[in-house]
Image (cartoon, rainbow, N blue to C red):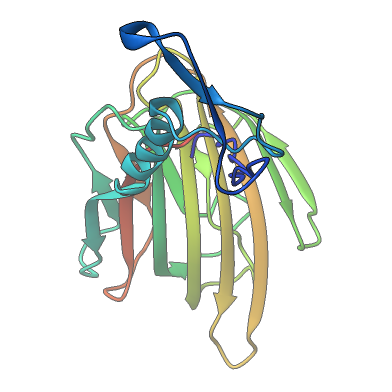
Length: 233
């Protein structure tokens, strides 16, 4: 949302009540003015101040986030594919709650992965993570942006529920793209655990993002929504 400088409105306090006026000149050349200046000069009610209010009301009347698409998992596929993403928003945001089968293996390769424009190359750089796990901080020039945190056992487990939101900045600009993710992972087994994580990544491409894919082994109770964000500065 753009910054807003608040106007402090002040009532005018006249020198006397009712006001006294002075008439100078004669006939059509006369002028009328206050005899004494107000004790307190009030805030002027003019076009500048009124248009300032109108402009802010216009901004507030528009949604800050517009739903582009929501995908609900069917359990028959391991990909959420958002294609033909329109340009013109200040940024993109994905919200999701997914349940997936954890297949085990070395960290972090078994996380759910996000891919931009089906790029499986080496453009994903400066991946940083802060979380509460024993890993603490992780950095890698990985070939895929890692999203969901891993908790619990390293063996196969179908009880992981992940909630997340992923911001994508500069998605339709000629700059590199920034992904910022906040997520939680909950193991709903008989020995439940919860993990929180924050991750960021640069996609070092100047091509506008028109497709976002999420890869994982998702169940039919999973869903992900893509929003276009406006007035995001």
